Image 1 (cartoon, rainbow over the protein chains, first blue to last red):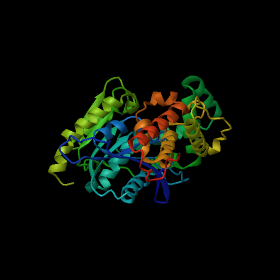
Image 2: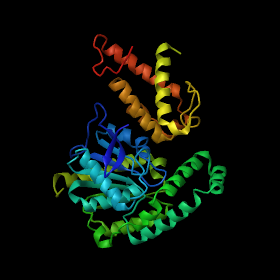
Image 3: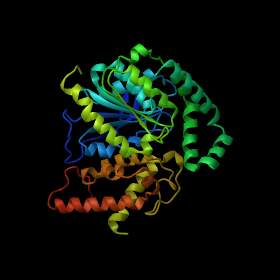
Image 4: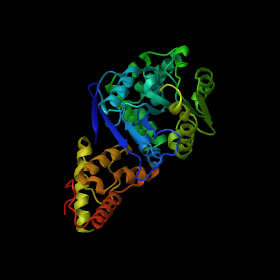
Length: 275
Length: 110
């Protein structure tokens, strides 16, 4: 297993080089894609078993990592504000010697990290694709406080786990148990809602191409018009019949959308504009 | 089971016990053991196993290609024996490609 010490935390990272014989067909250089997973029970495996192989066969270089506290990365007891995760991403890429602009793809909270990183390091980001995600706003922080507070209270309870096991299956119960353990052994549930948030004016400053995917039946779908209004170079796609798990449910569909976006929307940035 | 398979199975068992250390696996690992249901390994643990196997066997075996080709459903069904057979076939193919050249990484033992 390969890990890198970043900000005092061992981060589990997996790099997948372009597949043998793969040729990138876009007009720009083959992109380095940094893949950022979501909160709780998620890990880099969500990318590894969905988009990694097809993207590497399309000629891209992939960097997948486990967020602090998740997967096989270290789990410090504190330090889970959004800026801590952005620090980790910045430190990880610096530690790996990645100097040219990267594309970021983020699922759920991973997309929230991607927006924040694109604002902190506009020179280092060539484009961001987010799935079921939104930038960190005051409304986001309030929602996260509610959801994480409820999870932190319920998940460590044996009765709640038994209910999940009976109604949602053993696998979900096992994941819920792991999430409960994370929430009871770290300050994540308190730290995330206390993160520094962005104003609409700040969000408008994300100048790179952005692709936003939302499930038609997800509560996040209301973000689509907001992103259209705020971001100068955004393409939004609402996926019919889907909820929050678009990546796992429809990896082929996501792959085609992202590849098309890379070739069409991101080509301009590579040949013309700053960054 | 061939002698090569038995040796590969022993290697994998050792790595699995290391990965699953605090879960107390008294379980005897066989070709039919399932990663998910019996070993209670999540998909992320399988990624970590692939990293260890790559370090052990070097470039003769492409684990990223084998593991990442699995769908999330296929992972739930995956048995230790499938991995053993893939490794054996890859090592055979590598031997056939370069019969006279010793493995530069020294990773493949006879």
